[in-house]
Image 1 (tube, helix red, strand yellow):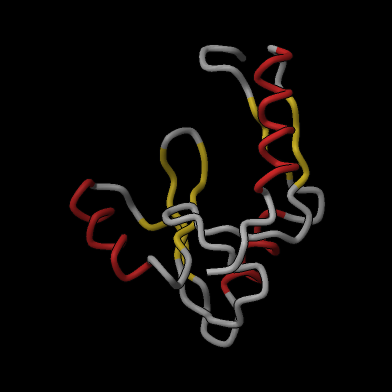
Image 2: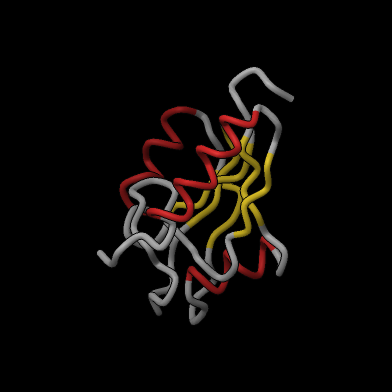
Length: 112
């Protein structure tokens, strides 16, 4: 697993958004992190992986977790929203889905 590029700058941005009490978008640029295990797959050439909807958004299970997560999703009744096609890296698929101006919106719990 490679170092998480969100570590310090991302954590600082999240804390600033939480302390400020207002929603704050944090750009993610080309970074792709598996939502299930936190592995940085930004430059990982592997295909595979899947997306699913839950907990207020779309989540992505990378090739590192997809085989383990799919039975859990099925058991919980959560449908798989999409799969990474063969010969396309999971990271490229995620970047194509979210577009060039992707960001994470950080809010305080209960804030809108």
